Amino acid sequence: MMKRLLLAAAVSASFATLAGPVAAQALQERNMPLAIALDIAREGVAACAAQGYNVSVAVVDRAGVLRAFARADNAGPHTVEAARRKAFTSASTRTPTTVIVENVQKNPASAQLVAIDGFLVLGGGVPVKVGNETIGAVGIGGAPGGNLDEACAIAAIAKVESQLK
Image (cartoon, rainbow, N blue to C red; front, top):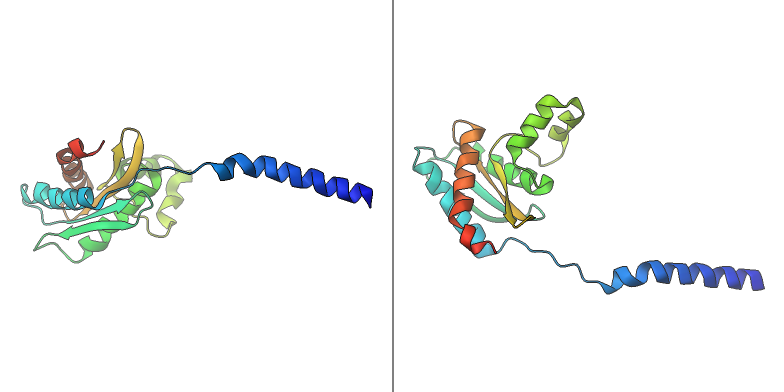
């Protein structure tokens, strides 16, 4: 009986030691503010419209949850989901989707990324960062190429860069 009590006390003390410091620390993360998300969505539509492209723009937070969305008047209906999924993919991987496309093409082990629910492995998704920390992502769909969607996303992020501090 005494051995059991000593063993129980030792196990309990071990868990307290392991859980103590972790439980005492609060996790602090930056995330996508609504005002910036709305600005990025508007700027993304404007950047593509300046080049004659009717697009949809989705802006998600660091977890890939939609924060803002804008669709140009003549953007196709397929662009809505494409933009959202590109943003989700970029936020989830913390990587521009054009890099993911390249990785899938070059590395057979990466090919199964296309099977992840919600992912869209096409250019046009770009992470939004504060320093090295990803706070969300923007996805654009509707230009005649993922590289053009990405260029509009980069332009939109550049327009709000002074707010990303």
